[in-house]
Length: 202
Image (cartoon, rainbow, N blue to C red; front, top):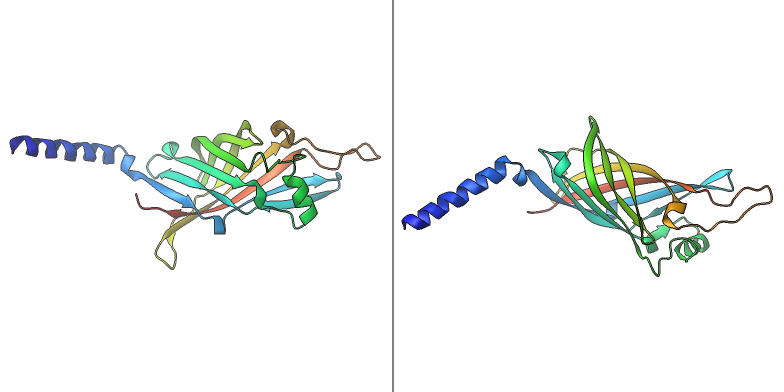
């Protein structure tokens, strides 16, 4: 009986230590695909901008209220969900000329470091993988917002992340040269991720 009581005290003490260290403050959040999109824009013929989005974005955020540096982000994007409002262009983007969706059906982002940039702003450094090639990128983040309860009583929060990449770095190399020496598709891609997430039970 004495041994059982001693074990109980030990377990209680360990739980108290974990709580005090901030471990218990970490909360899992699930990205809501219905209210999340990864948008992109690229120059076309060097005179205009083509915009599109990937509508199927999934993943999780482990958020630590007491120490944001312990937080993590893990996102996957379905390449086949690309939508530029032009079916023929979307089919070309899915082909081996661009994303090669048959061979690489997902793009992923996994955070390596999260730090505060200013009030309400973060810098998230992580690995972005496209077509099997991984490069480090930095996301400039507004948010996350303060959580609110939806009509079902679930806690929700949102954020917006932006970055720019060079598509050539990821093997997305297709292009065509125009008569004036310019190219059809620009190399710099601007990315905006509007993300909504739902708090999960621990």
